[in-house]
Image 1 (cartoon, rainbow, N blue to C red):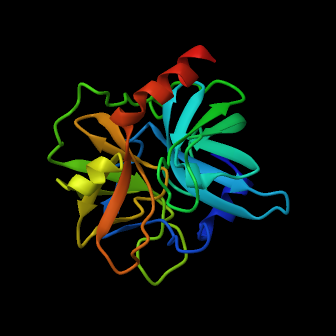
Image 2 (cartoon, helix red, strand yellow):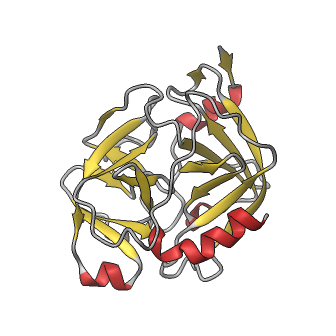
Image 3 (cartoon, rainbow, N blue to C red):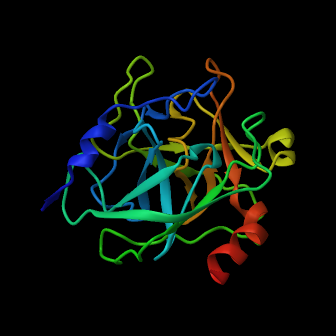
Length: 240
């Protein structure tokens, strides 16, 4: 069993600033340990040493996907994690290069998607596996999806969960969401920003990336629609 002291710093959730609320899974349940082997915990660090965190997910041995609003000066990716800070065979990887979508801005949070090129390749194990991405052939709106993350589990707490949590969500058929290249869900329980950067998983594939909400009192959650970005994703992950 390996214990990474750096993970202790991740027990406090920090907001990503401004109108963005702390990422959290509200009304969820603890995931069966290592049942989501694609999940990544992404530690963000600035020049001054300030740390934050986001969710993410493994696409292949050297790429992780997360949200573009999770940008930082330095990144550390943790794979094979269930409980913070303890875990068996945790892989701790640095990031060589980040690729936030070139049309993302913090003004409207559109195109909220980013790829992280790992400095070294992940070692695939029973607890560390990539997830397939939905593509343009997956055009129908999935009926039931799942969101996972280590965010806080209650609205009035700033502390992240010590274990991976998950919650089922149902996507809403909204024209405005589709026009903005988003999936949306409207739930009384669910992700508050879906644990930013974590995957929206439907039918065994990653369909979306958990984004942010400008409406703290609403139950409307946004996910960047991965099928609409395959022409941007594929050249990066396959050509580098």
